[in-house]
Length: 168
Image 1 (cartoon, rainbow, N blue to C red):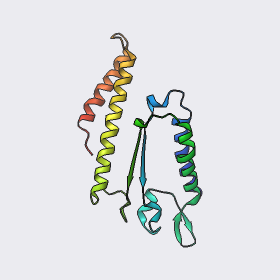
Image 2: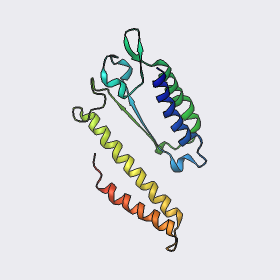
Image 3: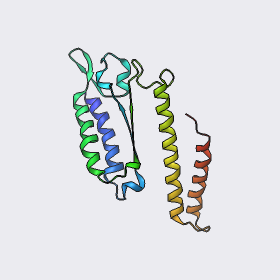
Image 4: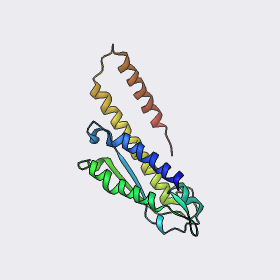
């Protein structure tokens, strides 16, 4: 259980450093792509794929959902994030609800709904990132002599070129 709590602690620290210490308007630089397995906690804990999607801990009858980690995750999602994001524009929040694929979790090869979810998620993420990069690049109002600006613009052009060929 200590290893799993450490795993969740690392995720929580990453979120804290990336979001809670943010000095800028989150509407200008944050997106929340929130995936929810609607029936995850209804699964039998003997499903070996569960440990790839949620924290598990040894219990009286084998592996069980790690209740401490679930409480901490729910507190993060339901209390800390919404409190920080009062005012985060709904156009920056993307929630996807999908059902668990028994024995596999997320399986785009066997489950057409999962395939559609991954396609939509990828398209939306690429679109949002391209728009955000373009907006930032335009706001810089770079001068041709500025070598840093030229480098940023080259990276931006390269990203645009590569995302056109990006496939799921």
